Image (cartoon, rainbow, N blue to C red; front, side, top):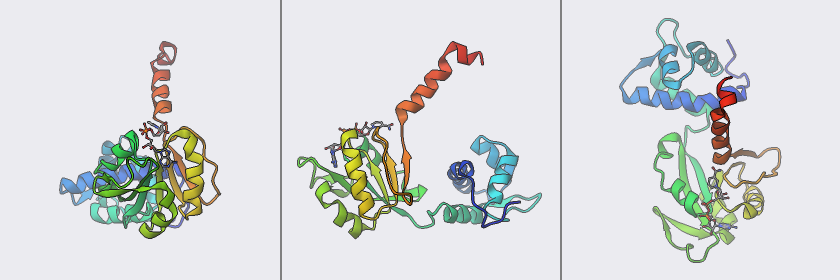
Length: 214
Ligand code: NAD
């Protein structure tokens, strides 16, 4: 059993949002308690893995009974740092940025989009699903005003590095980068690189007859 203060391994951290989503489903189904087998079925993993992962959060399950859904949701949310909604800015209100901004599922996953930026004068001042599109020239002041914690970069590749430098200088410590360039950031800044094309290439790799044969 890992202690509640143990460092959570990165592979476990990747599974925690999945468990949280499953628990929210269980809550919607009015299940007061779930066991590790039920969580594993919903999450597509095995019960031993679930128990091990959740043990990093402390001692919440009751042997033979399971986990109290409400309190596990609270603990997972707290550990994931989304007990209160995280404030997100989208930089680049093009095809992808507008699609993300229009997605209403972020709210229930602990994220709130509070600012949207673009460099195109034809877009600036317009409405982005209830928010006013700000000019990227105002990035620093709006980030400060809106207390942005996470920046989502959906700008073209050539613009991404300069934008990332500015959001970091403005105090943002977490970046989701959709642009196909590697960002160089200080050690205390976390970057997640979203690369759908690479994901598709992995699928293509598995379609290769030689790989399919194992
Ligand atoms: P797009 O051209 O439709 O939108 C880009 C937007 O960024 C435009 O509105 C443009 O005015 C704005 N922009 C340009 N420079 C800017 C700057 N300096 N500051 C603020 N805004 C600026 O492009 P898209 O199709 O939405 O793609 C956006 C980015 O996402 C690209 O880098 C693309 O390669 C990437 N992308 C990644 C994935 C993925 O899976 N990772 C998928 C699709 C697109």
